[in-house]
Structure formats: structure tokens, C-alpha cells
Length: 541
Image (tube, rainbow, N blue to C red; front, top):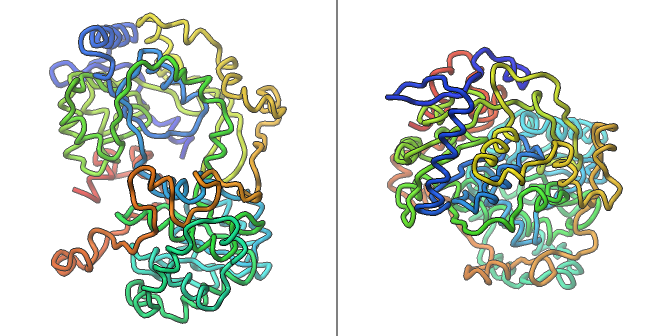
């Protein structure tokens, strides 16, 4: 699909400006001069936070951090924070462990049981799927907890078809079985955790009958899952879908607690494997981003940026850059997002295609794909490697790299010195911390990929990054933020328990599962029949 994206005849080839409602081709010089003039004027008159940068995460190339370098050197802007995808689960694991780390892929070979919780790895993680197939051949039992009997469930020993949004209740039910059988890991609980008394209190208020009714999972299956967690090292792989409900963060915390109380934290073959933030944290991003140059900043949440654009004052948003994102199809309300971005005086979109979002822009700047750039790539969801991506082909037309675009704008705005570095020099900045561990740019280029110095088994020393330094069943971080740090008994918003009238009117739930042929809206321009209609509008309008 990346090859098709790079070679697509629908690629944007030249800078475009909307004039009287119609896009006209203009030169790079005109586009950059006009955008820089607007940014310079805003800086002098209303302040730099009148500029918004709306973005998502793109391909995790190290040099994608240069956008932050540009906006920090400009003086600081309105930034979007949070996440549309996995943010609630990340925050949940930070409350519990202090960070979100996962075991190395190879560690699954130490597992005596495997639980795939809300994660169809057959379509979203093919490398893990192959390891599941190997584990099955070795006789390792695999349980898949998912409302749908997907391709991963079909190779499992136990498929648990759960009511959507009730995963936290199931985790509590499994914990109750383990606790009543006296099979909890007392040594871990007493020496390396705090707050388990709150878990016991919650479990005393829960009955297996309640759990079974709420989850539609039979009691016998709940007991069988308890055996998975107590029969030896059990690894859990947690998906993203379940944490997109109102109770999503609490759900991930409850699964974390199950993994911890059953003795599967900090041991080979165990783990609550959700994210792998240690990969990105290995790099020296501060060297690339120039945080110290930021004088003023305002934050909008990524999820609610449309609402915040429309209500912002002191100053209002006057100019927006949208990069690495097709925001109109990814934000919760397409109509509201359209209204928000259309309310901004100047919208600049940097993209490879004329997306829904690009169509509402005032300037559209064509950029390169990964095959047309040199960069280092890493992932924060599975493996521990950094990969070298050389430039393979020249970009078509006048498409330019983001690095070139930021450099040219910086020159026009008076801080071009911040970008007077070669690609290699920027990459070496990002590798400064790793140089101390004998990982250099030259080595990565030669070997094409290198294993980063990250623990294959996180938390093995039981030194957690929480305020207490222990695993926190009740989060002190949450309490410091004025929130209740205890794990809760929480229903999804549109459940029959919280919205009985609405549930009676709309008894079915739409599960927007990952399709085989595309990652959300990223490739819909390449899919026959969808070129003129956004994927978002098909499902949500």
C-alpha cells in the first residue's frame, strides 16, 4: 500500500492556493512568502498562540519532530495534546506503573498462557500473529477476548465473546475468582504495590453472577480465564478498541490490576502489553525540538480541538497548520470540525493528497512519502528496534520534504539558523543519548536496524515510575491531580444501565473494526469507489 501511495497518479504535485473558492497552482516562493508574512504579522500584533498546529503521529520518523523545532523557535503556539487513538490506555498505565512499557516480542516464548484482549492481531500485528501460531504448535493455550470471532480468535483455544464495553467487569470477575481461591501473588502485593485494600473492597461488592450477566460470559469461562492467569507466566496483549469507551481508561487499569495481582508483572513470559513508550523515550528529542525556545504556549486537546477553536479567545485562532492528519475524517464530529477550520482566517495543509481536510484549506503544500525521504523509524506498540529508511526515489512534481518546508519558512521568519543542519546532523542530534550506549548513526545505516537498549522484561527490578515507586492499584498520581485514584465500577455512556431509554431505541452497537485494506482514512484515496467520499462520512454522518 505504501508503494501504491507513493506512485499514485492522484498525488499532489504543486503548491495550491484557494482563490475565490477555487484552488490555483502557485510557486513555492509565493506560498511560503505569504504564509511567513501572515505568521510574522500575527507574532507582532496578537501573539504566537494565534497559530495552531493540528497534527497526529504519522510514521514515527525521528525527523517528524522538526515541526516542534520550528514552532518552538517561532516562540510557541497553540498545540494539540492527547490522543484520538490510545491516549486513555496510556494514561491508565502511567497511573498504574508510572509508564507504558511492553515485553520484547521474543519474550512470549516464556509464556505458559497467552491472553489476547480486544486485539485482532491477525490484521493489526502480523508479526505477533505468527508468534501465536508458533505458540499454539508448542501447546501453549491462547485465549482471545473479543465480541467478534475474528481471525485471531479462530486459532485460539478459548474465544470469549464479550459484550462491548464490559471488559473491565470481566477482569474484576477473574480477579474475584483468583482472590477467593487464595491464588493472588501475596509477595508482590505486600512488597511491591500499594492500594490493594481498595481492590479487595471492590471485589467484595462484586458477584460472579453480576459479572456474568453484564459481560454475557458464563461463570465457567470466567473461572477458566482465572486458570490462564495463575497457571504460570501469562502474557496479556491489550488492544485499543476497548479503551475508546467512556470507561476505557478504567478498563485498562482493571486489566493491569489483574495482571499484577496474579503475579504476572516483571517476570519473563508475563506483562500487561499495551504500549511501548520506552522506544520513543530512547531518543534525544529535546535536542531536536528546542523546547527552551518556547516563550508561550496554549494547549487544546486533540479530541476536542474543534470545540476549542470555536470558543478560543485571547487570542482567537487566526492561522492553522494541519500536518500528518486528515482531521476532518478523524475528529469525532466531521461537521463541527469543518465549521471550526473554516472559521480560521488561514489554514495551511501539508499532505500528499487532496484529502477532505485539504479541501477546506487556503494553502495546500505537497509533501514527500517515506520512500522519498531519509529518516530513522521506530514504533511504540510492539518491537524494540530502530530502522534506517534511506531515500529511495525522488519525489514527483514539486513535492518537498517537511524538513525543507520548515527550513524555508524559518529563513523567512528570522530563525533560519535553527535549521542550518544537514539530515545526518539532525539524526545525530536525536541519537545523542544512544551514542552513550554505543549506538551510532553510522552503525544503524550499515546494519539497517538495531535493537534499542530497552529491558526485554519491564519492571523486573520492581522499581516503578509511580510517586510511591511501587505498582499502584490506587493511583497517587491521580490523587495528586485531584481525581479518585481507585479502580471503579463504571459503565460505558450508551449502555442500558446509564441510558435505558436510548438503549431501548438503539439496542445495537456499531464496532468500527480495523479493515484489512486500509488504516482508517490514510489510504482511502487509493480504494476504488471511495475516492470522492470520505470513509468517515460513510460510517458517521
